[in-house]
Amino acid sequence: MDDTLVVPLEKRLGERYVMLVKQHQHSCSSSAAGPSLGAGGGPALAAVQAQWRFLNNDRVSLAALMEPLMRQGRSALAAQGDSGLGLVVHDWSKVAHAHGSDTLALTHDKDVGYELATALLVSGRDGSPLAPMQMYLKSAAGQMVGTGEHVVGRDTAHIEQVLPTMNASHGWNLRRLVHVIDREADSADHYRQWDGAGEWFLVRADDRRVQWEGQSILISQIDRQMQESGQLQDTREVNYQGRSCRQWIGQTTVTLYRPGKHRVDGRQREVPGRALMLRLVVAQVRDKAGQVLARWWLLSNVPVEQASAETVALWYYWRWRVESYFKLLKSGGQQIEAWQQETAMATARRLLVASMACVLAWNLERDRTPEGRQMAALLVRLSGRQMKRTRSVTASALLAGLFVLLPMLALLEEYGNDPTQLIRLAKATLPYFTSG
Image 1 (cartoon, rainbow, N blue to C red):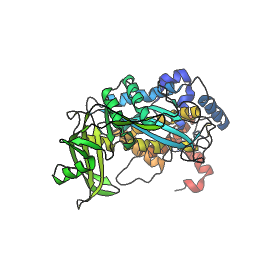
Image 2 (image 1 turned 45 degrees about the vertical axis):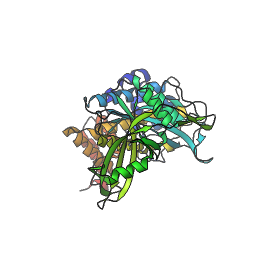
Image 3 (image 1 turned 120 degrees about the vertical axis):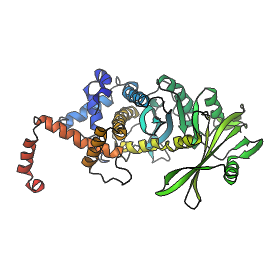
Image 4 (image 1 turned 90 degrees about the vertical axis):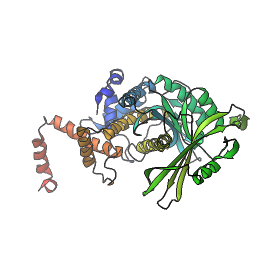
C-alpha cells in the first residue's frame, strides 16, 4: 500500500486509519464479523475494540476520511495530461443491512438497510475508475449522512441530488467534468436546470417526444429513420453477453420544447421552460446478421468539438464502472452487507476506509509499468483465483492477493527477513504439506 496517500490524515486520526485500510485490502468473507487482522495486527480483541472506537468516534469526520480519496482522484486524473475529460458517474444502490439501529425499509418491510448515493470519478480517456468523490448514506434517522458540505434530506429524490453534487464538484479542483447518469435522470426540467448552470451531462433517454427537422417526433422514430437512411455507422467491435458483435453509432440534433415535469407536494406538475437543443446519439449493438440486440438513446449538451458520437457512446458504456464498484463493496470484495456496524455514521466511516482499499487496487489494476504488471500477476497468483482468458486481472483478485502478501511481509519482518526460519518451522510442524 502507498502510505503517502494517507499520511496527512494519519497525522490527525492516528495509525489506526492506516491499519484499517490495510485490513480492508482483501476479499472478505460474508461470515466474518469484521475485517481480517493479518499478521502483525495484534490481539484480536484489541483490534476489534480499536476499530469500534475509531468508527464511533465523533471527531472522525466523513469529510476528513474523504480527503485522501479525493486527493487520489485528482492525482490520477492529472496524470492523464490534457487528453480526455473527467467523467462523474452518479448512481444509487441499496445496501441490505440487518444490524443497524437506524435502517429503513428499502423495497418492503423485511428488506431493510441503507441507500448509498455515489459520485464516482472515471477516466474519460480509458474508462478506468479513479475514486469516489462524494458519498451519502440514507438511513431512517434524519438527514442523509455524507461527505459533501450540502445537506441532503432523507426524502430528497435521486434526481434532486444531482445539481447540488454538480455544484460541489467545482470545489474538487478538477478539470472540466461530464456528469453521466442512467435513465432515471431523463427529465426535461432537470436538463434545463443543469444546462442553465453551465454543467455538461450525458443521460440515457427514454422514448420521449422532441422536435427534429421541423417536426414533433418520438426518439424511436428518429432511430428508425436514421437506420433506414444509412446514417448509422459501424464503429467498433463490442462484446455483448459473451458474443462478438458490432456497435453502430449515429448522431443528430434535437430540441426539447415541451414542459418538464416536477414533483411538488407529492404530485407531478408541468414546468414550462425554454427550448433546449441537445445532441442525440443513437447507439445500436448488432449481431453478425445485422439483427439489433440492444440500443441506447443518449442525450448530451457536450459540444461536438469536445467529443465525437463514438466517444459519447463509450462514455455511457463506462457508466458501468459504478456498478462494478458497488459489486466490489458487496459480494465482490468488501461484503458491506454483512458488516455489523449499528449506525449509518459508523457504516459510512468504514465504507470510506474500504473505498480507499478499492482505490489502491484500481491503481494496481491500471499500472502499465513492467513492475506494476509483475506485481499484479504476483497478486493474482497469491489470490488463488482462476481468471478468464480475456481478463488476467481484477480488482477483487488484487485485494485477495494483497491480503496474502501483506501478512507475508509482516512475518518476514518479524523473523528478521530470514525466510529459512519459517521454512524450518513449517517442515517441523507440517511435514505432509511441505514435502517435495
